[in-house]
Image (tube, rainbow, N blue to C red; front, side, top):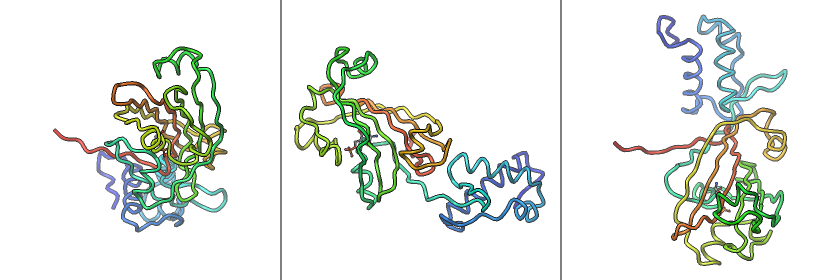
Length: 240
Ligand code: GLP
């Protein structure tokens, strides 16, 4: 029920209620939400408040609006643990999903000063610049742009980038990937991401930057990824 005497804002109570129904499976992906008017009548609250709650859920990727039809529940988000340095291929396989890639571009370019700085190489040293749409069961999940020093990761081909980069580095090149730092920030899809990730204009996006290192501390990759925030949430277990 909605408690109007609570210090918790009413829109937030409704938002949590709907989110709960989605989590519990009472509202399933593809289900249409009751109309604003129905929610307003059921809970004795204003339509403005209902709209505020639903807009928040739209912005967070839990539901989406279809013009002239209604509001629908999005696909369930993938819960990605932040512990453990894994590859996209490993993550998808662990979930029983089939990983796929769509190569957008594959080039060897001179490193810009910022890429050189991240990879601890000289400016203009050759680096692979590879952009891939990462797919799970054929659905676009993320757009990743990777920079790798050509000298350190020789022999990368378009075919290799159609499958797992980490597998190539470890199994074929025999190099051990040791650790990475990752920064996550929120954003909204730009035109390129809208097209390649097949999302609506201004959809929520999680920008992830990963710096990966080999055992001896040599940087091996610098990756910028745009993950669909309607399909992903990140989880970490914390101890104290
Ligand atoms: C994830 C990371 C990337 C990494 C990739 C390797 O998607 N965000 O930084 O490059 O995994 O994945 P794969 O080995 O499947 O190519």
